[in-house]
Amino acid sequence: MDRRVLKGGDMKFNLDKKMVIKISILVAILLAAPFLVPFTFELVITADLLGLEALVVFLLYQSRNVLLGASAKYAELKDNARVTLILLASMYLFQPKVYLGHAAGSGLILIMTCSALLAFALWMPAIYLSLGGFG
Image (cartoon, rainbow, N blue to C red; front, side):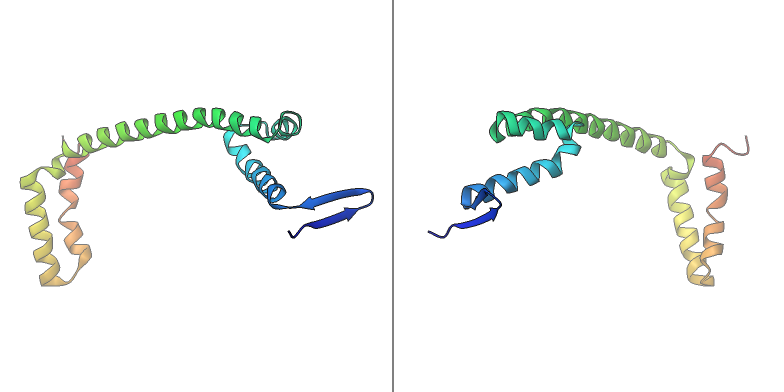
């Protein structure tokens, strides 16, 4: 059994498998704590007084709030994307006749003149009408 002992004055520190696991868990908690809860230093004191197991349970309990917040943000993002797609689908520019006609025309202009600027110029009236122009 290989046991390394670090001596610092009168204090002995055994680096066995259990101690390495505890140190790595503490380091992981210290790295993750600012993202899970706002009071990191209190967590270190809690780990010292109540033990590492109580601290892990406490962090798992607090991570529930982070997951609920993230799911609420995801639902909000999904609703915003849906509303944006509905808005884009109702624009004049994305009507099938307008879109296909302008895509074919700009493709033809691009092939004939090799000018992307001229091909884009064909889209300008449709974009202007989609934004509510001329009326």
